[in-house]
Length: 193
Image 1 (cartoon, rainbow, N blue to C red):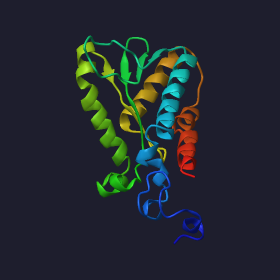
Image 2: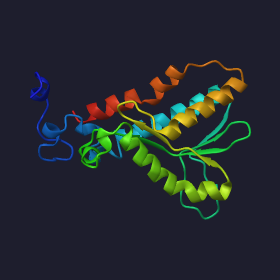
Image 3: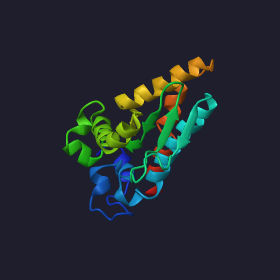
């Protein structure tokens, strides 16, 4: 038992009543299924809004949850970015690589393992939509520990390149601090108490 840390935490999650969930995973609240429609969704939406605000600040055309991209399609990405000469579709995910399921699957022990797996799932889900529209598909997947999946890095670079063309100055570190969703991660963890 770590020095005084585990003793301060309850053994079971008060939200999902999973036996020993906090004893076995002190970060349980970052992946508790009872928070999927609460703080975890807020965290996801905060990342989407941060990207949107950032794009507008950079002078880029952006749209949150674009509707009607293809008639009859039921899939709806979180974000549409239109830097000069490109259209980028993106769907956002915030994942916790230390969740027990991610660790059991081996994702939590490889650098960006969980983010890469979810990025692949997003690519499969939106491939037809992006192909029909001939748009570039860059899922934006960020881990609660701060890592960005390869497509998220490309997305940030696309924004930076377009912003430099608009002669706006910004700091890559500044965007990463906001996009890591520190507030959302903290709020999700605290929601369990």
